[in-house]
Length: 138
Length: 333
Image (tube, rainbow over all chains, first blue to last red; front, side, top):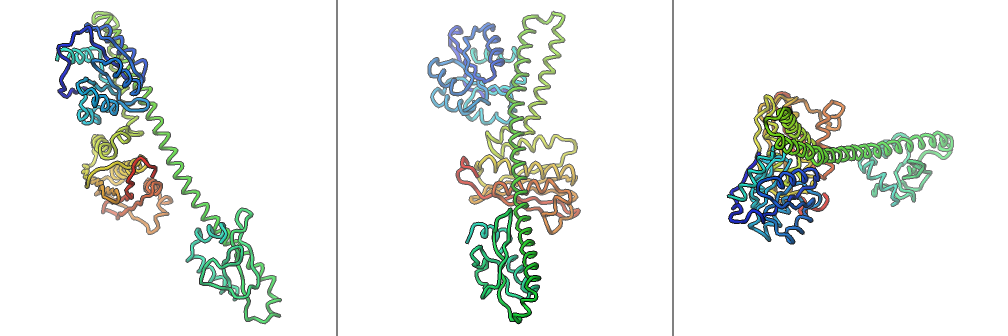
């Protein structure tokens, strides 16, 4: 299941420059997403964070173009981190990826200003590529 | 007053002490009072006059109070003749008082133990739910994505492509099943969003069961968060009450009302099921097989709340839970 909330996607940004930050405490999942993105036609530069704290640090230092954020993280959760990031970088697209029930978190994610929320259960290479392409091309 | 005597008075109760004193006086034909270790009466408005003798009331080898006997009008010669018998009776009475006290302590310990078991049970459920989510479902999602990558490399024409596709479908279904199990053990939304969204979600899933009753969920007042143990206790009471209404009472309709008051959080779960005969003594519920009801009562007591049940055969059931509002939800309740 997926949902995007009509937040303005990235447009007019040169493809080569795009950096995506994958925030997830599960290393195998991060690695799969990295392989997928690095092999995609859009040549994403992938950075990884395993906690909200690491993510915030990277956001300030590296200014990623897109964040894929898990909800359940050790320490601060992904929704709180999203709120904090969007306070400082309101234009930064954040896609919430979760293995929790998407319906339960849809409203909250939308209210926070996230780009969308996607269930990890339904995640496929094509779906993720489409979403990322949507972010790039609008 | 000594600490042991305080505990003795508190556990046995002032009214019971008074009744016991009167019964012993009638039995022995002597003024009788319960005293602390220094012979000060435990009931303030009683006196024994000049003391004849006293016997200790002991618990676990320690004297916790005394039973004091005063003088009587009976001739000293007669008193001397019955002194040994009187002493024996006094000791027996003291032993009975000690047993009553120990029973009270044991009963209190049982309640604490039961609360402890429930808390340990909840912690274990929480741990398993977290592990199912954090390890198993995350791992399965990674397997699904990994299979997708392999399939992408092989291409749709490859001999094993459809087998991998089936594996991926199975991995996705397994992820969904484990997610549901994790939800049942401990809904993650309860910690993240609180009672109302979690109950909405629970009621929605409850309604998907075969021949499930219609559930009306009402929220009164402005929603606020409470400490996790209070929210969990209320959530579990709703779960138990709804399951009872569905599985045992065969109700067609359940109304759940959550009222966020300024002073308290109140819950009511009303069903139109078969109902049941409710004895006068709720402490007998366990022996009558209503363990779920006892569980609800204990859960509410453990968080400083109250719980009540009203039911009659063929007249449905009403469960009420009340919890004083905690103004700082991050503080332990």
